[in-house]
Image 1 (cartoon, rainbow, N blue to C red):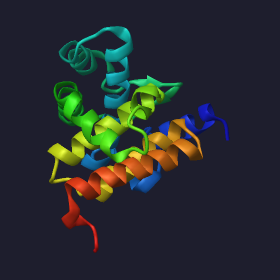
Image 2: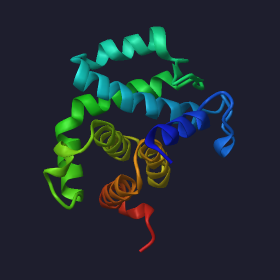
Image 3: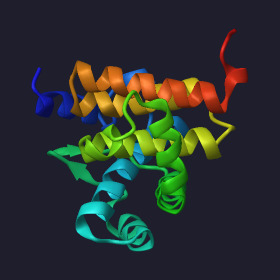
Image 4: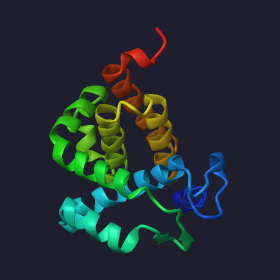
Length: 177
């Protein structure tokens, strides 16, 4: 399956017509999943478009909350969840990058990887640090879903290893001995 096809399939899962995990537009988990995807995209936009977090958040709230992506109408995103992730990653990026680099086989790999993958790792790490109310297993699953949408087996394996290592280091009590 080509990258574009995988991305489109994942977007359909988060769309109005998607049936993945029984998402319904009024369920917080479904809106949070979409918010996570939009946060990864927003952070990419900030890096490459020269924007700032608050401007991207304001644009999202005003214009993009129920966005259509690649011809697919997305479910409504949890705007507060989206905003928290974008702000949190933006404010704590140095700390987040240090944690990710400690979990990677090569510390320079983070700076060399594709931006979408880098931001998925950053968002997952932020949630692991700041949202202890969300189980680490949920964070891992959610961000691996995003990575699967855009990348192949090599990147999925890398992301799984890094996110899992970060979660085990920061929340050892959530994993069986």
